[in-house]
Length: 150
Image 1: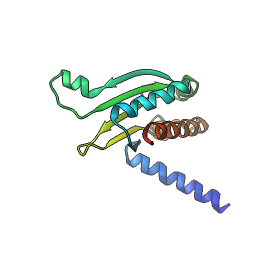
Image 2: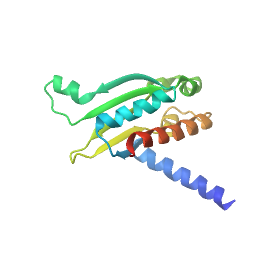
Image 3: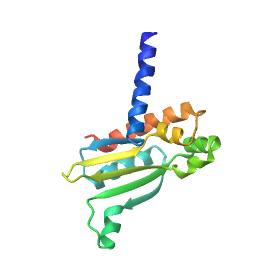
Image 4: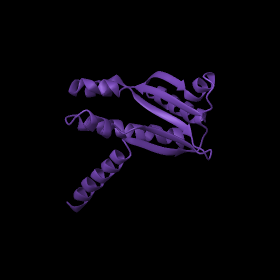
């Protein structure tokens, strides 16, 4: 019983931390921005998750005469999960498919950031898809680890 209570308290605390972070989960990467996104794209494809778009912000900025450190966005989705969010609240379509951003900070360190599914559910007042949110959260954690860890 104590373990269940501690697990619930821990989950609530972690959810609050994610909310304080504007719903972003950010992990350090051991790889370059390009390799981080390559690795994420590869694992997603292997799992049958569709890639909607890959956008190199730094290349687009360069074309506009603006200097930007390496920054790449990957938009991806799994309709078998994401569509359940829409059937609860169609406004969730503004936040799905999911996105991940690999970026290099001013010290040269690379990071991978993505939206916390629990934050997105809260944003859209989705309170009837707990299992879907948990499945998304677990999968994103695993996929982002593959992308960022040696």
